[in-house]
Image (cartoon, rainbow, N blue to C red; front, side, top):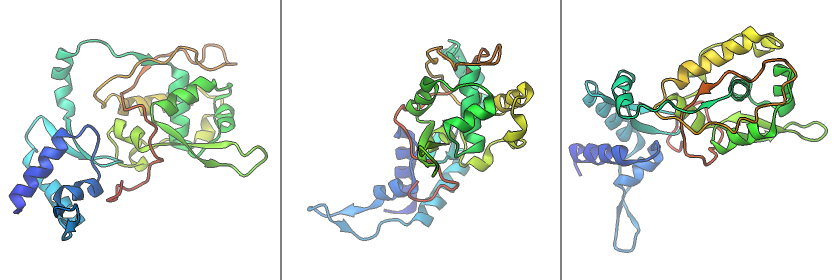
Length: 249
């Protein structure tokens, strides 16, 4: 198979894939098998595939969709400037999540790994178990370990699915914020967290179903009332994200 044919295969696979494709998955496209299913040769290496991906990015540079690298792999997606037109064929306003839910997600994203107790200490309210479960079901957070203290509380972190839905390749691309400890008890601080995540959520394409409205058991008046829009992802929980998108991720 020559380079042009290989690039066509790769382009087709990316266009048809329902989820981002890792370099490891792409390599399987080019492994030749004998009649017994045994591999014949090494196929294409990671460097060759990365070169083709860069060529595809260049080939599609003037189109309405682009090739992007995310936390869990590569995919085609619409360019941000196309959103206003795509919205015309899907005019429904997306459902929204409560402020309490997004605050919880923001704290996990910026302070991870954290326990439920850490979140409650920062927010000053008791976290509803359904809020944590909903974020886990969406695939945005996962248990990544346990703190070695009495009771061994679960440590929570964000997943690759969370970064994928924000269109990011790593946590380092999240907008910088002041130390979350400085936001304790500060409505302004939590609003800053909301705004930072919302800016990125707005770049995502599709909405999710709203949360059940149960919210958290807030002890501060008025907390958890401002709705915020978020994007969709396959509900299966994702693995904890890594800082780099290597060939297995």
